[in-house]
Image (cartoon, rainbow, N blue to C red):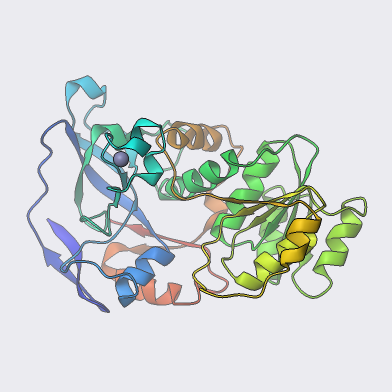
Length: 338
Ligand SMILES: [Zn+2]
C-alpha cells in the first residue's frame, strides 16, 4: 500500500509498504482522511524521537474494509479510530484510567499510523460515524475527544462564566463544549479572525489578548472574574494570566501542554484565591461516542475549523505550513487520501 514514510527527522517520502493485516479481532480501515497536528510536527522535526521508518498520523477517518462479525461493523461503514493504546490489565486501566496506562502507546508515534492507505486497529478503538457527520471533518473528532475528556475533569454549571484563553483548533472546540454545558463563554486571543470564528461558533463575547484583557474580562463577569479559565496555548505567561483572571474559588483547566521547565507564576494568588489547577491528559473510549453525538446534533461544528484540505502526498509541505509556531492563523489542515 501507499504510505508517507518518515525515514529520519525532516525526511518524509512517499513509499510502498506491506498492507497491514487485521488479525486477532482487529478491524482493517481504508483511511480516507486524516488531520495533522503539533504532535506530528514534533515527530517530523525529531523533537519527539521515534523508530524509523515511521508512518505518522493519529487523527484519521475512513471506511471499514474487514471487521469481525462480532463488532457489528460492516464493509463500507464510515468510522474513526481512537489512536490511544493501553494494556487493559495494569492498576490504572483496571481503575478506568486508561489514559494513564504506563504501557500506553500512540498510533502514529509508537506504532505506524494513519498517513497511509490502510490501518489495522483493535475493534475496541473503532467508532462508526452517523450519517450527519462528514468523513472529511471526522479526524477532528479525535481532537474533540481530548477537549471533552479535559472538560469532564472540571465542573461547569449552566450560567457560569468560562474564559477560553487561545482560540486555535482546541480553543474553538472548548468554546463550543462550554457553550453546550450552558456556560457564558468568553474567548480571548490576539487574532481578530479567530475571535470572529469563536463568535460564529457560539462565544458570547470575545476579547483581544493583551494587557487589558484581565480588566475587560472582570468587567464582563460582574467584577469577579470567571468561574473557570481554560488555558489552551501551553504558554506559561498565559497560565499566569489565567491565575490573575480567575475569580476567587475559581478553577483553571491547564489544557495546553506546558513544556517549559521553569517559570514565574503568581503563586500567592493560587493560595489567596483558593484556585484549583486541573490537568488532563488523553481521552478515553467514553469520549468517542459522546463527541460523535455532539457533532451529530450540531452542538459542536467542525467544518469551520478546517482551514485547508490537501492531498496526502503533500504531507511534507502541509506539516511545514503548520510549523514550529503551530501554524499562526491556520486552523486544522485535513489530508484527503483519495
Ligand atoms: Zn494499563
